[in-house]
Image (cartoon, rainbow, N blue to C red; front, side, top):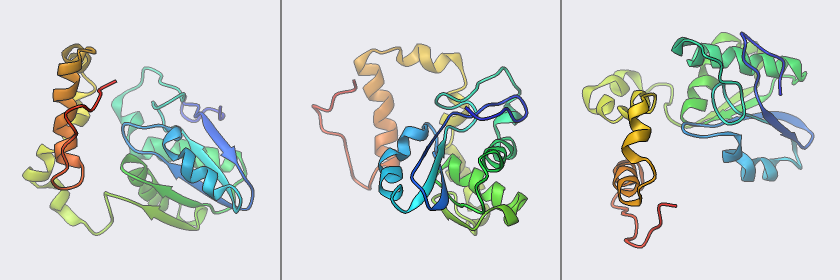
Length: 184
């Protein structure tokens, strides 16, 4: 675990040696999302893979939602980079990790060498704020409600119906899960 930054300690894995690389996961995710990538990089890089605030094994103190936004996450990642003495790492992130990576680059461009990011990308402009796009992001605040767990509570048919929405909206165009696909 890292030293605390603003009351949050981050769990992390570190492997390999060479040029420093920081891999930031998305939502819902954890550092384990990058396990295969980290193993491929470890022969050439000093790979740091943290759990963001509130994810995986990192701290989840009772804090205002603002503490989990990009600026707060950035403070923790920057604190970890400095604590471990990483000199200008390449920072790679996807989804929420992409937002944190971009915030880090804006906040402390001198602290990183490069960004490797997946959506949301710089230059997308206000398209992400359109009503059509925003309708697809309902799940983020929804999952903060106790109601979400009560609605799907492990019943296979409910879990499958719930997940089919995401599979049909976020998977490759036209992809449908096979009928015999297990929800366990």
